[in-house]
Structures are given as structure tokens and as C-alpha cells.
Length: 252
Image (cartoon, rainbow, N blue to C red; front, side):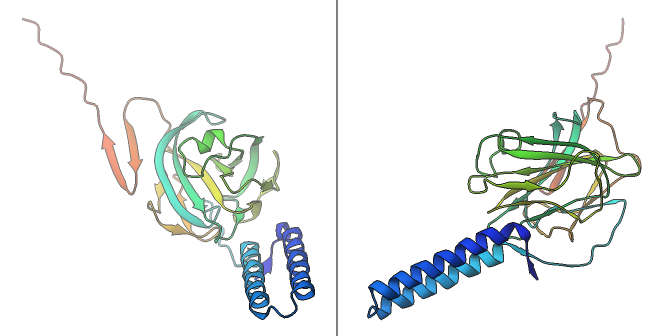
């Protein structure tokens, strides 16, 4: 277990704050033993919270061209079909992972390939589970295209608490599955947009691990959306709505 580079400054400031507060308590209230112990305990808890937040575990990642790895630790809060209007401009399966403050906040590439698109969007700070957070909050959008020419779009989304998004990729970069592409401080959300026909391996409410959990398996022939019949995936159930054409009336 190592500490992520994004946490160096925060840890240094935390240590400085703890040192100053403990020194002041010791100087002004040398005989207030109860108060000093309370400050010591709170200082220790603060240090442990910041330390665990910026942890960056190392592990082996099995590369697989057809698999889509989860880009972040957290819980699956959305599985549905939706229109992606920023870059792909077609119908996609959206999987959203909510990251709480206790999760590892490293973000990892879901697939290997070439970064075809990157864009940073300033925006609002709605709570991460708000339906409009994906399009109105501060966010980044990344599109990676694998060797088969299949693009996967994913977004880092800031929340009410998380107001610092960090990214390490740019358009044209060649990236590897599971490699770090960014970091979000103090919890938020990551959305992944997959082609129709992709096999989804997770369910709503499932706890997932970045770089370990296989979110989905890409199809060799992803289904393009041509309008008409739409397959809606809501929660963990699949509901298929088929619209049958009305029978033509016979001429008398």
C-alpha cells in the first residue's frame, strides 16, 4: 500500500495542523489532561482518515481486449440505456459508479487503446446521484477506442464535496487497461458509456473495485441504435419493450 501523489500536499498540511494544534494546547493548557487527550484522539483520527483516503493499492491487472474494467471503487448506482450527446451521439448503456469518501479514489482506464477525445467541463456541484450531475456538474469526458475500433466513453464527475478533479491523459495518448487516468478528491462519481449489445456483468447496488471488477464484456459486433425498439435496462432487471405494428385493414 502506497500513498498517491495527489495526497502529498494534503498529508503535509494535515501533519502541520496537528502539530500546531497540539503545541498550542500543550502551551496554553498544560494541566488540561482531558482536553489534551481529546485533541490527541481527534488528531489521530484526522490523520488516519486523510491517510486512507489517499491510499493507492498496487495489484496485478489482467489485460483483456473484450473486457471493460471498472474505472473506480464504489457502488453501482445507475444501469440504463441513454443517449450520449457530447461525442458519440448515439444510444448507449450507461453504468455509473458512486465513490464515497472511504473508497480508493484512483481512476483507471476501463480498456486499452488510443484516447480519441478529451474535454474538461466546468460546471455545478450537484450531489453525485442527481440525474443531471452527469451533464451539468464539473466533469471530464474521455473516449478510448480499442484496437477493434470500439469506443468507450467515460466521465469523472465532481459532486457536492468533491471539487477537485485531476486527469493524466490527453487526446492522442496510447493508454493501457487499468492504468491510472485520474483522481477525484473526496468522493464523487464515474460514468461509463458502452455500446448496445455489450454484456453487463454487474447489478444495481453492487460494490465494485477499480481495475478489478469486470463491468462488462464487449461484443464483436456492437448493435448500432437505429431507432424503433429500445431495450431498457433499469436497476438489475432487463425490460424489453417491443412495439408491434398495427395489422393492416383488409380491403372489402
